Length: 323
Image (cartoon, rainbow, N blue to C red; front, side):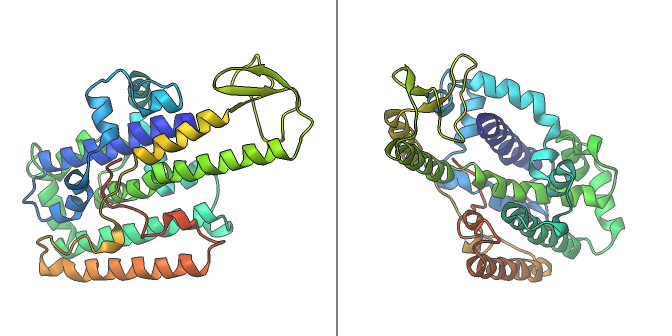
C-alpha cells in the first residue's frame, strides 16, 4: 500500500498524467485546438487549489506528507516514478490492467472491477464521440496529427511515450485522452478522504482487537508501534525482527488529523464541468450523452451498493486533481 500510495498516487497519477500530460498537451497541441475543451476540465483544479503531489516532486523538497505517514521522502518517490514511468498503462489503462490480472471482467462480479470497468466504458465512449464529432473521417484526424510534427497531436503522443507502446492508429489518441480522464478515477482510490476512511477503520479494528482480549503479549514497545507475540489475524510485522507491528493509537490519531487537514477538493464530474467552456455545436451531443451516462451510473451505484464501490460514485470523483 505504501508503494501504491506514494509511487502510483504521487508519481504516476499526480506528477505524470495529471500534470505532465496536461502541460504537454497544451504545449504541443495548443489551447485553441478544437480538442482542447476535452482536456481543459482536467486542468481546472489549479483554480481551486494546487496539484500538491506534483509541486512537491518538482521543487525537490526534503519532506512531505509521505515522510510523516510512511517515512518515504520525495526523492525516493521521484526515483520510483522514473523507474515505472514507462508503465503508466498498467496503472491508468483499464484494458491493460485487466490483462495483467488475467481475468475477463465479464466473467467476474467484483465491485472494484465492476466500477472501474463501467467508468472506463463511459469515458471511452465520451472521448470517442467527442473526437468522432470533430473528425468525421479518419483522413481528417490523420492530417491534423501528422502534418506538423513539432506542434500537433502526433508530437504530443510521442512525447508522452504512447507512440512507442501503441501502433500508429486513431485509437492511440482515444486511449491517451481516455486515460487522462480515467486517471481521476484511479486518483480517487488514493485520495485523502479514502485514506481517512481507511485510517479510521484501522483504528476501529485496533481498538476492537484490544478490547476483545486476544491472547497477545506485548514484546516490543516504541513511541510509534506495538508488537505482539500472538498477533490478531491479519496483522503482519513491518520488519523481520518483530513478530507483528501495528501503529499505536497516538500515531493513528495523528495520521487521521493529518489526512483531514491536508484534504482538498475540486470540480466534480457530475457538476456539468463543460457548461462554461466554449464548445463547438458538433460535440454537444457527445457531452450531453456523457452527462446522462454519469447520471445513470450514479443511480446504478446507489441501487446496487454491494455490486459497485460507492466511493467511486460520480459525485465523489473530481475531474481535476489537486490534492
